[in-house]
Length: 383
Image 1 (tube, rainbow, N blue to C red):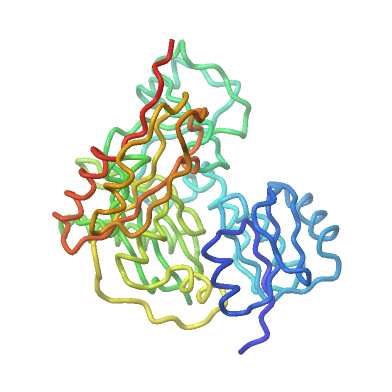
Image 2: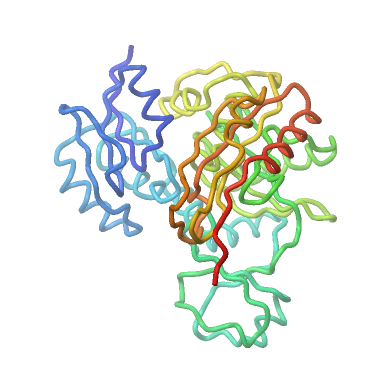
């Protein structure tokens, strides 16, 4: 076995489990104390800075003189820290410019627009914007997003010029709202080539993801071609990517792409759909190892992400029926009666999940509908 020593920034549970299974020494830099390491490894809890200067200061403070063969980013916020850290600790290098583009939605879209990638109209947020002109240019409604956040954190839907208040320049991006179904493309890349790709259908936005998606062949082909064009335009030569798209009547529109594994329990669903461990594949790609990817679908899987909204939980019903249902592979519930729930400010917040797998797309849809109608998190009425 090669003499690997890995620094994980923004750890993910599946990745940590694979590192431990392979007995690869690793250290962690995490934003909150979620994961523990052994007494012989470093476990740093510190902000995942957006500033290259602050990242360098943090690395020199937390990992003085440390050398790592590889630095792996597990979350969106850790992509830029990982890119900067690699150069300080002697690790395998990635393209820093690419990492920066994939971290900033505005720069990403400005760059890709130059390559003719289809996307909705957008503008940089600025205190100097004229609201009337903004809505004339983009149409209504307008979506405001933080440029360096994920999961819908801080997203605003602005319906008319009166609802627009100037944001801080350089913080947000403004886009024309797209009312269309959504999908994503997950890719494993090495030596500049896509080695494996999965299509995901956001069947119920923010809650239900079908893996793999079942699209018409023309749609599937167009999505794969768009994915290849985006990866090439950004100069991504290795790693895992997660590209989100809008499926409009006129064809797919690019939403954004991330250089890290997806959330929404998609990795869990992919493992059942394709009969392989995507975390093992992700680690192999990061370590520049070979990996034998599956070539055929094993099952039609889905991840059902649970969150009933803000309020107090009155009752949870249907748990036994879900556990007894054939095809349910994973089920975790994080709430109980009487618990107070906050608003869901990001897609990463949930109260549990169900992952299921079926032999056919039709059986998957039926099981999805059964779960939606049977597993009920009832909330007290709001006065």
